[in-house]
Amino acid sequence: MGLLEELKELGANVDEGLERLGGNQALYTRLLGSFLKTMEAHRVTPDFDTADLTEAIEKTHAIKGTSGNLSITPVYEAYTEIVALLRADKPEQAKEELVKILPVQEKIMECIEKYSK
Image (cartoon, rainbow, N blue to C red; front, side, top):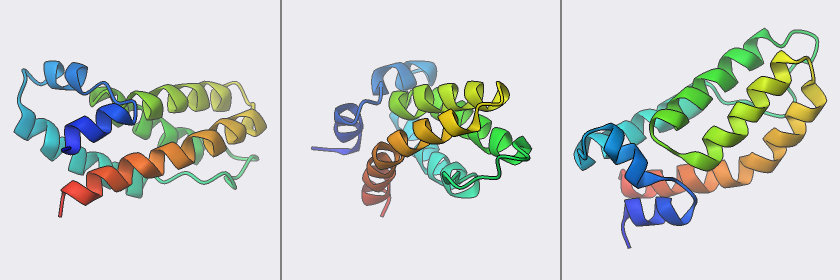
């Protein structure tokens, strides 16, 4: 089984992501590397500052956008909800959603890392 098949099993809509890129599998694979960099640069942990949500909103929005562009559906859907909750000043509920997605997010990142070596 290859990278794209494993990502599909983890819930990514790889076909949609490829379609967005005109079917260019090499480009999609390369952009998955950019996804990893975005995830590292914008890593959000459940202990974010609830008094000032600006940074958390910026980070979660960046992850939402990158995962959406590549149709990494579980991450995109979770971060869409997290961004909405943060903007609605509901940080505790956002933290709950973040805790739920982190294990899935890690599996997806591990899968991409495995094939990018």
